[in-house]
Amino acid sequence: MTGTLAIAGLGPGSEAMITPQVRAALDAATDVLGYIPYVARVAPRPGLVLHPSDNRVERERAAHALDLAAQGRRVVLVSSGDPGVFAMAAAVFEVLESGPQAWDDVAIEVLPGITAMLAAAARAGAPLGHDFCAINLSDNLKPWDIIARRLRLAAEADFAMALYNPRSRARPDGLARALELLRTCCGPQRPTLFARAVSTPQEDLRIVSLAQAVPEMADMRTVVIVGSSQTRIVARAAGPLLYTPRSAGGVLA
Amino acid sequence: MTGTLAIAGLGPGSEAMITPQVRAALDAATDVLGYIPYVARVAPRPGLVLHPSDNRVERERAAHALDLAAQGRRVVLVSSGDPGVFAMAAAVFEVLESGPQAWDDVAIEVLPGITAMLAAAARAGAPLGHDFCAINLSDNLKPWDIIARRLRLAAEADFAMALYNPRSRARPDGLARALELLRTCCGPQRPTLFARAVSTPQEDLRIVSLAQAVPEMADMRTVVIVGSSQTRIVARAAGPLLYTPRSAGGVLA
Image (cartoon, rainbow over all chains, first blue to last red):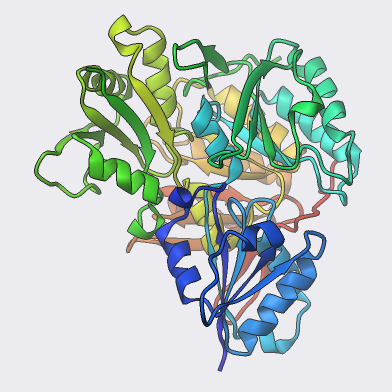
C-alpha cells in the first residue's frame, strides 16, 4: 500500500500562524521529518515517529520521506515558513526526478505556509505592498556574481527586495557585500528592515537606512527587506511603520 | 475609548488555509470591512456588522475602517490572500499618513495570509523554489512602460515571476503584451502556470509553454507564474509537477 507525503509549511514560528490544513496533516501523520528545530515544533504523541535531521542533508531527508511514504506511511516533511520558498518542496522534486519507480505512486501534496517575508512585512507595516522580489543570499551553489547581478537588476527594476538567509556559515561576508552593492545602487537613505524570529519570543525588528545597516543586525533567523524607491516610513506613537504605496510607479533610471 | 484595526488575510479561498490568528480576529470583531466577495466569506453572527464595498473604493474603505476603530470598535479589514501583497494594508497606511489625529491612537496590526502565488505554487509543485519576483499587472496608476521594463529586467535577472491581476478591466490587453514580451525575453519553451481560484471549487490549473500561453487562460481570479530558465516540468501519473531547483544558478546572459 502506498502512503502519502505532505510537504508542509509551519509558518514563521507562532502556533497561531499554522494553517488548519497543516495542523490536520500533522495530526494524521505517522512520521514527521525535517530540520531539527522545525521538528522540535511538532508535539510528540503515541503513533507518531519524529525524524529530525541536520540542515545539510536536504536530499537525503527528501529521499527518506519518499521511501517512508512508498512503504505506506503518512509522512509530513516540515519546513519553516512556506515549503515552496527556499525550502524542502524543491528538494523533494529534485530527488523524485531521478528516484526509483517505487516513488511514482506516492501521493504528494505541498501545503503552503506563511513565509518569513510575509510575516516580517506584516509586523513592520506593508513594505511588500507593491512589486517585489525574493533573493536567497545563502545558496552556496550559486556564484556570488549571479547574486550581485540579481541585486543590481532588482534595484534597477525598483523592486522592494526580501533577502532570505542573509548570514549563512557558507558565505559569512555575503550580506556585507550585498549591503555595499545596494547602497551604491539604491542610495544610503533607502529604508531597510531587519526582522528576526518574527512571531516568536525572540522577535526583534529594526527599521534603519541602508547607510545604517550592518551585517551584525542579521543572523540565520533574520529576513532583510530593502524598500523600493517609493517605500516610506511613517512615524507613530506605537513605533514606526514601513510601507510601499500600492501605485508606486518607482523612479526608473 | 480607542479600538483596534486588524488588516487580515483570508488566504486564497479554502477555510483550511485561514490562520488561527485571523480566525480569532474575525471571531472577536464588531465590524468586518472589505471587497464584496471577501466579506461574503465571513459568516454573519449577532454583534457583527458586515460592511462589504466595491473594489474601486480602497481609500474610502480604509478611512471607514480607521474611523470605526477610532470610535472604539474592534474592526477587521479583510483581503484575499495576504493583506500586504497588492492589497489593503498599503491602502490603510496611505490614508493614515494624511489622516486626522483621531486615528493616531488606533492599534493597528497586519495579520498575514497565504498569498495567491504561494497557494498556486504549492498546487503545481514548487515553481518559486528559487529566486523570484511578484509583479502586479493591473495597477492602472502604473504606466505600461514601467511594467514592461520590470518584466524585461526580471527576465534578465532570471527570476521566476508571479504575475498578479493579469487581466483587469482597466488594462484588458496587458497580459497579451506581457506574454509577448516574455516570449521574446525568455523564449517560447519557458514553463508557465495559469492557476485560477486555487483551493476553491472553481480551481483550475494549467501548465503550458509561453508559446502556448494566451490571455484567455486568465481572468481576475488567476495568478500566472512564469518559470526561470531552470524551472522544470516533471511528468507523473498524477499529473505534471512544476518546480525550480533550489540551486538554480540560472543562465544569465
